[in-house]
Image (cartoon, rainbow, N blue to C red; front, side, top):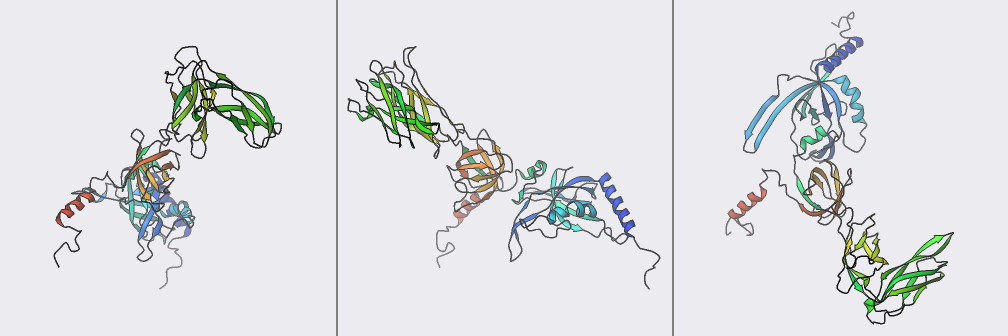
Length: 472
């Protein structure tokens, strides 16, 4: 016969009451766990094998611990490969709370990841259990226990076991969660150095040199930098010929010569050389030279190393003074090639005076700001090789030894990982360093013995033979 029509066998109001009581019970007697859904990044279409997945979302939700007396499962097992932990935990969460506060976010993931079954907890998702500070993987979701009270289901029962990390990407932005796998997985090593090199220059002294240039007329109408020419030294040595460059400026819409800097003060002049300013689309600029024939000055420099890493820097150059005190120390300014971030020229503002033929002055160029690298890499951020386009995630950074442990290395080009000499940049920290060397092997896993096994195998069989097992 049909059910008794005078009894509802569970009305909507009764079902809502039971659900509210369950929610309240969980919020009073439960613990706050973090539910972390698994996002499928790539899977094989033939046998539906998940090749890579990532966990980059986190949702706090209250849960009741069914296994309140302790972890279930096989416990801790000692094996020849170390401790094998078989802890399990069963958690109960509210169906209504999950559907109201988590499902809408899962359904709005879009096409970036493959999201299946977004309306309930899924096997393969993770749960962070804060009391034990552990990550558990959902192995089974029981959705019919208790069995249809008043005709409805109210909770999900999650049967979980300890998560075994296999190089999945865990980036929830919750440090307590992400750091669970900081020492896990296949970890390789980048040995880094600074990206800057200090320039090295050598000064030379001479007498009969140009010690001043006086601009008597700055000219006008220049559309580009004019050429400055100084008459040759009577010594006949090309290295003794003075040279200079002009600097222009714009005032009132008119470009004129602002200043002239010596790039070589010359040597061997007995009378002041002539100086001419031509080209640049303008005219009228006139300058005269003064010379020093009584003492030595720093007349030129040679660049031993142009340096590198002077991006945005204004490096300085400091000359040692002449032997006697109270005399004139040479001064100069440096220019930088913005394309290579190297020193391009040394321009004298004063060659100095009072040096001697045997004084052997020195010149010191300031170091680039990134000679030791910039910044500090942060855990779990992505680094990118600027030449190879290889990416990886930071496991740890040793600032003193400049050793960067990385994982999840993704090859961005045809090269096998990071290249020595290329610059790597952190996407979050903006840290910049140069790769000295890249160690492809995991040297931190004490159970990684691939090389030893291969060497022992080579001692048994010679695989260079066409048939190492016989003569046939």
